[in-house]
Image (cartoon, rainbow, N blue to C red; front, side):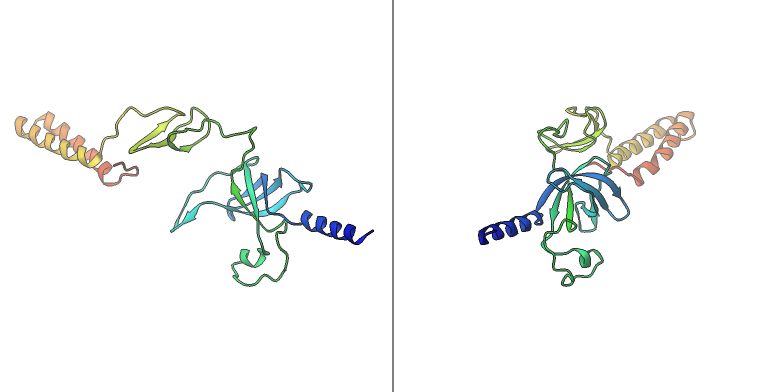
Amino acid sequence: MTLADMMASSLARHASELHVCLPATVESYDPANQTIDVVPSVGADQGVISQVPLMFPAAGGHALTLPVARGDRVLLVFSDASLDEWWTGRATTPADARSHARTDCFALLGGRPGSAPLANVDPSRAVFGASDSTSPRIAVSGSDIHLGVGHGVSATESVILGTTFKVAFDAFVTSLCACVGPLSPIATAATTLQTALTPGYTSQIVKVK
């Protein structure tokens, strides 16, 4: 074997051990630790990579999490350095000098091939919800928020603004009682309804503007 052959062989071996970025498929998900076991979708070594940290968008004390399932697609990004110390919370120089190793990677949700694009993508609205065509979604278009709509569907019913409605309804009950007398059955029914509706104005879960 010539020197050139030896150098070529060494470079080829180094290249085969240098991992940068790969698509993969989820085998299992650990929601408590936010790690997944994955199988690379391309490359010669398609054995399972275990306990890969899954990167959910998170900042400022808030996070967006999704129900990860077996078969979901991810993109693996391999680290310049060993992640062993980082994973245990120690920000220090790695004890192992490995670089771009197969076991040192993060997983980003997504990374789909052209043969399996996301279904029912809305080209003009920001959408959160299931990817089928009928499940309820939240869609944002300009200044409008559409709740519980299917793919490509716009909401047609307006949401009652709690505080605005309360002011109008209280004024109505006051006027009604003045007209028929506070002890009449009509006034009693109106004030009973007013009392029953009051908790809804003060403990709203969904708020709109």
